[in-house]
Length: 124
Image 1 (spheres, rainbow, N blue to C red):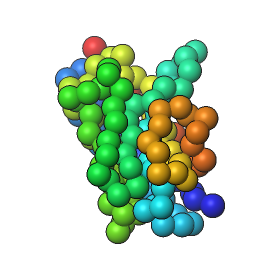
Image 2 (image 1 turned 180 degrees about the horizontal axis):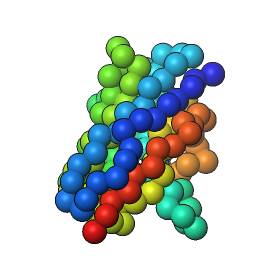
Image 3 (image 1 turned 60 degrees about the horizontal axis):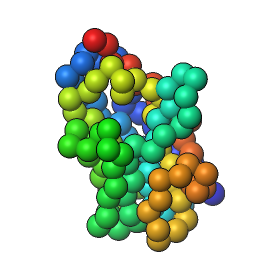
C-alpha cells in the first residue's frame, strides 16, 4: 500500500504561482508512475500531468502545457507540481496519484493510489 498526501494548495490571484507537493509513505515511490489530476465542482476528474517512475518521461494536458511542471524526487519519496501563470479556470481540487506500471497514462481509473486532494483557488 502507498499513502499519498498533497499539500501546497491555496488561494492565489490570476497570474500567480503555486507549488503542490505529494508525499508518499508505505512503499518507495520509485516503483510507480505518478500523476496529478484535478476536479472542479460538478465536473469529472481530469488529467493534469504525469511522470514516469524514473522521471525521464512526462506528459501534460494541453490546457497546462508551458505553465505547469511535474517533477519527482524518488530519494525523498515526493512529487511536485509547479504551477505558474495560473488562471481562474485552474481552480479545482488537485489530487496526486500513483500507478503500478511502466506505462504513463491519463485515465484516472488506471491509477491505484490517491491522495485526499488539496484545494487550489485562482481569483480573477
